[in-house]
View 1 (cartoon, rainbow, N blue to C red):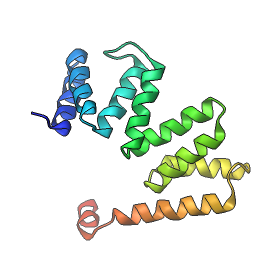
View 2 (view 1 turned 90 degrees about the vertical axis):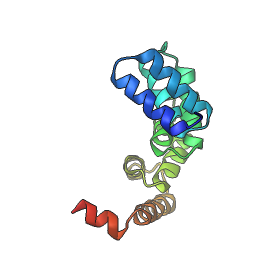
View 3 (view 1 turned 45 degrees about the horizontal axis):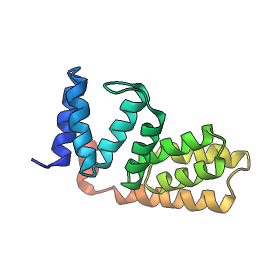
Length: 148
């Protein structure tokens, strides 16, 4: 009954079926139970205004909750939001964290701003090593066999 993963999945199914009221209800319940993916989905809903009124503050709140919960895309999006608001230092911090979680787009963002001198060589190298370690940690013989 209080399974946040099941609630999120049900919310996503309701969303795909066009039942946005139920989708928001299920996804919100999942987020209340601490599911980072649910917080990320709510940030998207508040960004788009689907099933809820568009609300930038709620969008950012749910992005922050998802990022705190370890959601790499949310962390990347927070970085993009900070960059768009002129806070490049904060953006870089978010992107470094997302890169250490193995999120490729964050590494690409860091690479782009390294090229123009906004990230130090040491910080970029450290993020690159952490990104590679995160990718290596996901490898297994079973996963490689499944990809073939």
